[in-house]
Image (tube, rainbow, N blue to C red; front, top):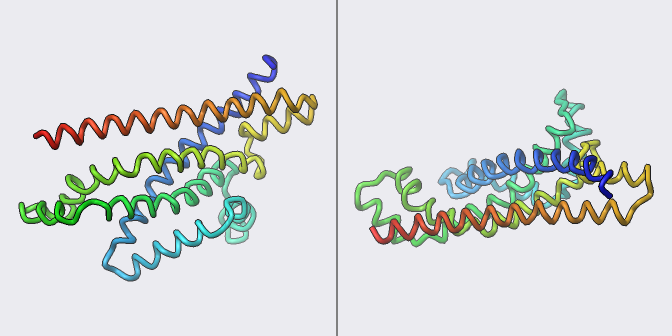
Length: 217
């Protein structure tokens, strides 16, 4: 098992890189799309709805295959790594969009009205009143989404990304030590998921203390 570990850790490093890159993209897309769903413009709302429903309503694997195999027919060729990041980011961003929209709508309307009465502009109300409360509500759900993103990286092995699952498959083909290899893979994925969960809990505590300090002021 020790001789397998360096190979699997090399794959785990690629998995972490994909997860981190796709998470950044997913969060950005979720906030843009979530805020777009609240726009007064029908065109902006409609565009956001199409994006969310398309990527929530189809398989992540099909989305990865489409980006990797179909986009070249339109003159756009992505590397396997770029395809993995883009596909996972778009998919999780679509789910995150509803999280953002729901958290923002959950902030009591009286608070936004009071902030507006104090002379704050719309962007200032969103930045100083709505988002701090909404982010605290989003964090537990985002923790689940990021763990789903991590698990989704296993599919990128099918577009030849040398991630943890891909390396495990190669090792298994070469050694046939199936039980040992995939037990190690299971443990590595579990540890990575635990790191994500602990990071989210840390952010929850930090935002919670910040929110409590603001209320005492």
